[in-house]
Length: 151
Image (tube, rainbow, N blue to C red):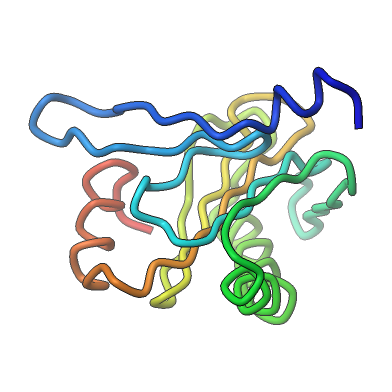
């Protein structure tokens, strides 16, 4: 890993949203920001192609980053690999999330959460997932609805 890759993967915190909805968010090296309260997180920039009836999401091994203790990251990765990524890919197709869209869709299966957005990139899908067992699920869902709308 190069020095610039390491710098790119450093976690930083930022406030996002309007003053009424200020939440601390942690930026990942790849993907979208996750709430600062997350105990484990993962982010990726995947290759994304949307065609009606055919959505392709390909993860690239060196465009992923994460944080958290292994005993928390393991269950998060298992959920992503067995459920989360397939559900979000199906939702991208069902909701016609084109590769030029700036919309963010999300999935909540407490204690796991997943965000996905092409960010109008014409070829990438930015993904972030996190595990947060200490936050009330309804509080997390309300925060996601406020920030990204219904999903």
